[in-house]
Length: 259
Image 1: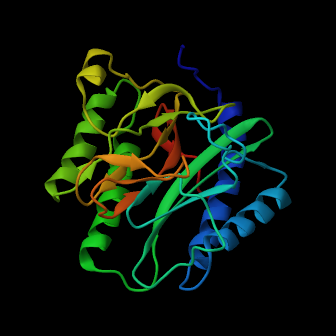
Image 2: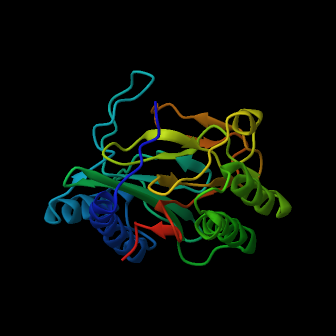
Image 3: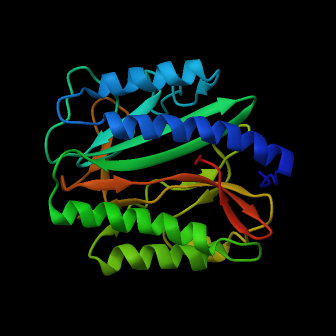
């Protein structure tokens, strides 16, 4: 499928969806304290999404392996969980956890998608470094993206940052194009591969990318848990995840999932 280039009008519509995402994630970050359940965080997200007149992108997404559709508005992934964690009343946040929250909306036909990892209470130095490095990888993409730039050059800088700290980049999951659908072309890896070098992405004005580095403290290998959704590190070590929806403009990158 061809990569769709979006007009300024479409980018403005995506910014509106992105503002809902930003509002919800800010509220969830403030609400993510010791003792709260991940289901309660999901209820906050669902209420805010409904009040904004938006649609929760993740709720009802079909499972590729035949399990039940995703049941919530947000993904809540704790410690060794990488992505797609299912909110639950039985899961309550504890001191020292790190929590990755992924959330997306559709508003007036256009999508926004973002994620962040937050510390619950006081966390150890290595977990904090993991979060900082992963957020730093996203910053590299935002600062370096411009028309004519090859994505492989940006992905190499992102990967080098993670690996220089002794961490590993998840390779089973990548970012993606986004527009009227949550997942559009192209696939946007956070690392360099033979496939990327062979068929590189040259950034163009009007491209909209959901860039989402996922970084593990140990091995890059992951496993899917018995619920058919939650993905965790194979070695049980922590993982972090940050994401923004980003528009490539003539002047560089514009982050759409902020206010």
